[in-house]
Image (cartoon, rainbow over all chains, first blue to last red; front, side, top):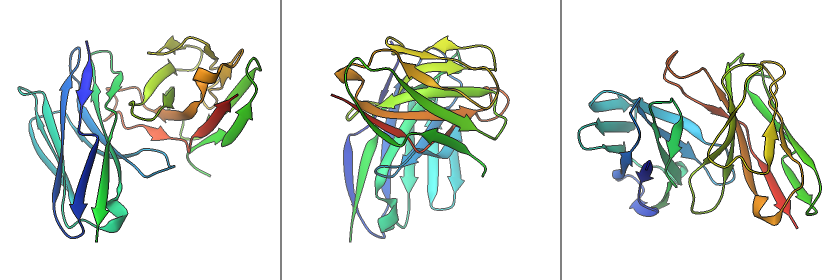
Length: 109
Length: 115
């Protein structure tokens, strides 16, 4: 079966660094996405990885290891506005997205 | 305005009633999707359309139908609503994966309560 696993909730301190992990099992693999979703709002695209390695985009970076079926999202210099849910999604061989339940990130001052 | 628009944003509905959620995009994306989002669960795909005139079933299609008469519109219909269809519904659009990163653009969501 296809599955995406990520922690339900994490807490971090403003100004710190946090790493949100995601493991995936998909039928075939065409990439791994991270989306951000603030409470009561729509998901918005953060990153896409299809090759192994780290993709950096400002304060956010995303890492992929295809051999391990593993990805993480790294958020640096945390700000209060980063409090949100972070959704991991794998793109399978049929180009359909398989979504994790999301990780709720709570930022404390 | 550019983007993807859903209506209504919120609706309370009696069980057994018929309801259509509307979705319109002006980005000329080929693919459109309907998801439902429930607490503790990931986004679950209801139906999708890779291009105008074609539709496909997702993970949880029962009780829902869609049509794709043109590129811009992708309505979702609940023929006879049941309480288990209480959820937040998101419409999304994007290029068919393979053309680019497959990034999806989401509407603001429709919160539906079936009593």
